[in-house]
Amino acid sequence: MRASQKDFENAMNQVKLLKKDPGNEAKLKLYTLYKQATEGPCNMPKPGVFDLINKAKWDAWNALGSLPKETASLSSSLESSSQVEPGTDRKSTGYETLMVTSEDSITKIMLNRPTKKNALNVEMYHEIIHALKAASKDDSAITVLTGNGDYYSSGNDLTNFTDIPPGGVEEKAKNGAILLREFVGCFIDFPKPLIAMVNGPAVGISVTLLGLFDAVYASDRATFHTPFSHLGQSPEGCSSYTFPKIMSPAKAIEMLVFGKKLTAGEACAQGLVTEVFPDSTFQKEVWTRLKAFAKLPPNAMRISKEIIRNREKEKLHAVNAEECSVLQGRWLSDECMNAVVNFLSRKSKL
Ligand SMILES: CCCCCC/C=C/C(=O)SCCNC(=O)CCNC(=O)[C@H](O)C(C)(C)COP(=O)(O)OP(=O)(O)OC[C@H]1O[C@@H](n2cnc3c(N)ncnc32)[C@H](O)[C@@H]1OP(=O)(O)O
Picture 1 (cartoon, rainbow, N blue to C red):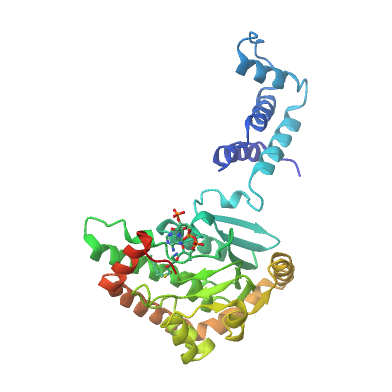
Picture 2: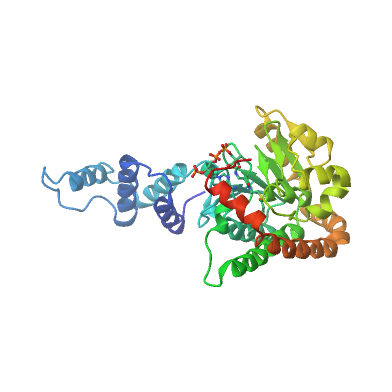
């Protein structure tokens, strides 16, 4: 397929958005291809020998000779897309905390704060809401959520509690509850099969939400931990309703109240995880399976999910509202504030 001028300009814009500098050589190559594509053969006067930067530009552009504009445009687009981080396409542009890609009828939303163990900061909550809304309308058949790096996610970013607005902690808690309710609501309402690829340990809200997914595939490195009582908090993500149904009330209490951490095998035995894979083959095996799922008739999958979920939707939204309201109160408690201060001053870790 021929790259259009628009594609070419997009590619040039993407270079500006790269997180990692592509290096001078690549940038010089792109510059000269750009000049050739827009102006044709080198038309700038040859710079003096001491004008090193312009000399390098001139040499590189001049070396393209009479390369046709169209060829330069195509090469430039290809050059720049190969510099983009693997698995990234144009759809991911604009996200700070996610990598969102679409391929083989699968939209992949990857949590992308690996140095913070993919903790969910306020921006990430908003971006996930946005990505889910976009995925629900795009032409993919299924959507996958996964994490970049060694963690799936360490749950809520505890520094979210530090940025206090003029209205004080009460306003902070109220805003948090509103955001959480909208965030969880998107998972309840998501219309297509939603699959979690749990690539490593999962904590807090990243675990509770799994009860709202349609399939959960886990690496055998993954663990599942909801230390809400340790944090002076209470369950969210509809887990107060989904977990007792999935794994029995007693097992749900062990996790949600006593903070028992499950291995992937244990989580699978409890029904929270659909299947566990050895970490060494996790990506390959799961993606093979997902690609096969994505070839199934999308409308049939959507309608089948709808008929299963619709029966529960009203209840799930009511549970979500109640959990958010209870949490709003917990965030103002001494128990919660002390736990957050302890983490932030590194007195405690899970
Ligand atoms: C709109 C609001 C909605 C709120 C919804 C309610 C949600 C509730 C929950 O999700 S409760 C769960 C909260 N999560 C935690 O309590 C986990 C806290 N983190 C840890 O205990 C540890 O970091 C760890 C066990 C996840 C990993 O330990 P380790 O392997 O030793 O790595 P580091 O601790 O050095 O972590 C690296 C780096 O990441 C930062 N980080 C990790 N997790 C979080 C987090 N949840 N919040 C904030 N920051 C986190 C950690 O501080 C390190 O940062 P640094 O390198 O020091 O700058």
